[in-house]
Length: 158
Length: 294
Image (cartoon, rainbow over all chains, first blue to last red; front, side, top):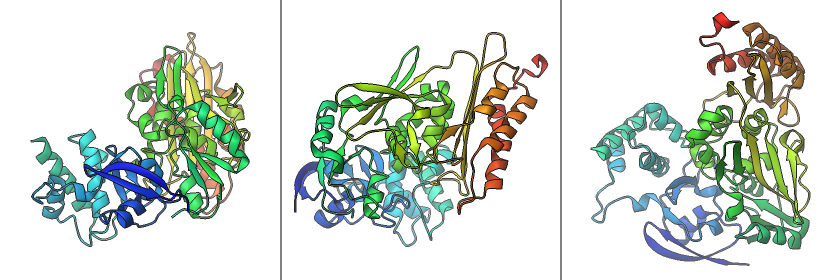
């Protein structure tokens, strides 16, 4: 089968992968690079479980052609913690506010929140809800998730 | 994973993209943000021999603002429109339409040109663009032609684009005069939803205070996004009164070719058109501080 070699950065490190034209970015991250934080939920851009950042923007990795990652900077949830493994303030806020239950949606939620806070440091609740509208959670409850993003925004802006 | 068996091409200029589409022939499908194409590949609704990606073609990117209006590269994303304060101020209905598409993740990659080329009857951006008399620049490979957006759609999921042709730009003139405009999408849930009915209205007043231009456009009210001309005619040449708006809304509701579908019923769609056309103009400030003038 035809393979196309792509070179890109994942969480700050160089990666080179030979991909098939029909692969999506999610497959490259999970199967080739063993970064299993991003999850496959619906596979159709509805649930947001596969959310990663490409050049700082939240995208659904399930709908992102792998070939198009060539030359890009990709951030997954594995890239958020500090060098000593200390959690990113957004991750810590999710833990502290009880915004993680089963955890399946959490990596996507955290990255959507990061994309928002990088763009809008102190968002309104409405802005948080809009930014996270494409991330479905079926167990934790959105109230704690919104609270966590607000707490993280305050800490990051301090 | 998407269906297998296609090649993937990433041209980096418009000339290269057009040449590739010509060489590869009708089995080649242009793709921009891929949010529709990839879903269709996965569902087996699309089985191309080749995908020609337009997302690295600089000629198709960027918003250009001039004193005459706005030129949108076909590959401008919905999020670029959403984040642009100038567009929000001068083309609020387009801004509202683009900001409500899918999720932020989708808007970050899904392009306005892609939304038009996919030609869904529900296309939000199309309704916003119809309100502003958008014109489409189509690159043919040997030259270009300009087609008003009202003539761009040929039916559900069909456009007038011929094989090998690429939608390059969408041009919008700035409304000349005091303007009230907005877009409202009626949905069953608040986000990540297609409209049950998409409703847009724009009224631009002339120097005499009467309506110089009225545009009313609808999504999911026919085989393509469309304008309802009889409703527009009711408003033009007259003072913009609440009565006139209510009558125009009634005409639009009758003119709309709405149907029953699993997403909503025809009577409800009609009712929303009736209710929301005056409300959109009201929310845009059409009667703010003007009650005395009328």
